[in-house]
Length: 238
Image (cartoon, rainbow, N blue to C red):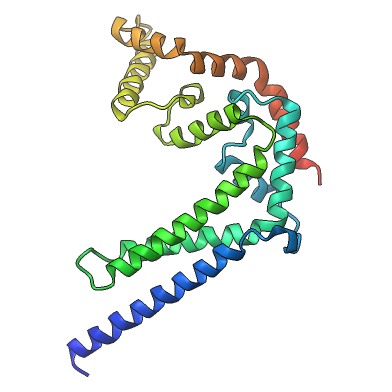
């Protein structure tokens, strides 16, 4: 078989693979959260911790979100109950999304199968995100929309790598860069035993004075230990 013929066979097989995956994802999305009919499974502690951290229901994030120790324990119990019915579906959707995005990275917009592969990746990511949203709704049920919004902001801003109290507030890329540089300058000055530059000090003071940031700092100082203890006890209970 000549080279052009082989390319045609490969392209055709790729299209069939993508269409097959799309069909599987569509059927999975329809049945994924039929938790009432799902077989309950034991959720391991590492698995429970992993998903709680991913959705912003770890002790530190719950603390800055203003969640009480008792409510933190309820959040853990809610997560365990949801995962007992849906863990397999959630993990399958996560793996499918990772695989679909990996396949998308192997093609370019010029490839014949690009549109199909991208559609499959978009569908897989949307299905995964829908599953995570269902977990969030179950975990944060009864905790209040304000607490859920703060936790969502922390998860969204984790990648900037700044102290937790600053993550409760969304900023532009430029604002994150400015704050990061000011904090780095303050640390460098402290390490040298020097006085912090007035401009950097002003930037940090303004950030610390923000109502959301100030509340987060206070909550971490006064409430983290008790929230962490209640959360850990809930994790350890079977």
